[in-house]
Image 1 (cartoon, rainbow, N blue to C red):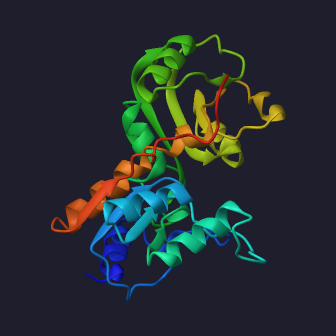
Image 2 (cartoon, helix red, strand yellow):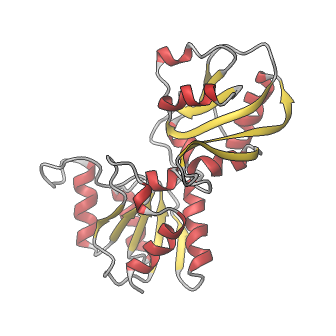
Length: 258
């Protein structure tokens, strides 16, 4: 099967045209004409993921974060990216990424986390004319104390900790969230009437939250990891006869907590 067919299955849900201008979604190693027989899905493209693909017989690797993200001055074994690129080329592995294009569809990154939290009546938070965009906003089944919401979120997402701003006095009901680094949408969440905004990579000063809204930082990895299952399910639904599976190390967070 051509790699372009697998890519098309993903892009039917999350078109590449949706990606941010600074992003590098799509083929990172190889192209659509590559012949592939099975795919391995991971979060980040690392030497370990390439090694697992080789051992499992997969000749295509699909990740959320692009392997090549910025300018590369040289490819050598001195850097993680260099070692990964060299390993992929050495073993003939086609590498593809679906990053911000998968962030900006309702079924994507934020939508998957919203589903785990049990949010209802969800819509895109910062949407364009076609209804696509970053973030999600929705409602809990009913108002709950902020502390109870944090406890339930930790349980549902398997979190060890949550950084948050001051607990509001009123119960929370409307929840906005954005997977990954979502500090830029704090204002949009407040303007949309969110009682709590959930994201990752929130900076110190942002914890002085807008009046009436709590901010919760669950971590970059934790707020996006659900997308791995979405990518895998999307391919299985559209190409049921293609072998695809989630990598064993796909849920390993590079950030550790002591």
